[in-house]
Length: 298
Image (cartoon, rainbow, N blue to C red; front, side):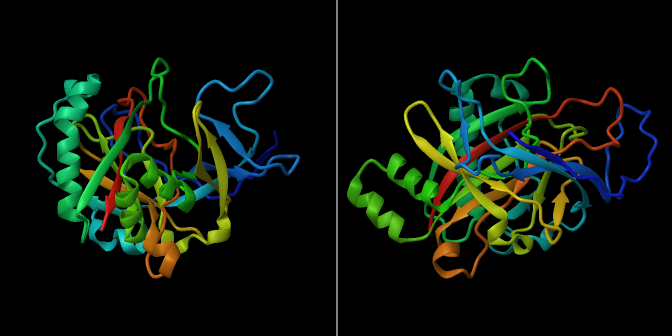
């Protein structure tokens, strides 16, 4: 597979990172990894689990660019789901503790109801929520799921509709709901109360992303094939991050919106990726986070 590396001259602001409790904040820059097409121009794919014998895990390449990142800390209310495809929530009460996230059962029994209530309260016109999966990521070499350091979008419009039909078992109800507005929204949060120091999340405002920047990628499961999207670099993209996120803050990431691709009057998706901040101090806490993925109807 092909790999292209491009270097620009923008650099992160120099800081003293000798204090292990330092929280990187403010404008910075970082290398982000974007999509590059397969060398043979074939359809791109990615195997979610072990690929069949003779097949690579994925067949497309990458392009690395140094990107300027704006810290939204202090300006959180300037962004919303309809315009940017991301939105922040602060001072969110929770009955969870760190140990809640050690068990699938406790996540679903304790945290899922909080996420459902959160979305019903904060997403206008939402009337039905289906939480269909979650992922815990830890920036630890022994963790099975690491932060993803590749710019991507979780869903295509076709994959979002397939999710409706997969999770709504009554065909008549699925048809009725799919004819209305439905969105896929990820709810992202750190697992700990302490601020995130390493491997924060970068996200681009949908208002700066051209549809031609996005490439459908077959997302091959053992029993079915979904679609995600790779993201090509475009200098017009505007990239952001939220410095030092804490356990009482939530980042909503909209990955699909049926109203957006039907009418074009609202944002549809948000490219995002973890990134390595050069200001992260030695001895910083490894990032630990959970993202819960939701179908939001209405």
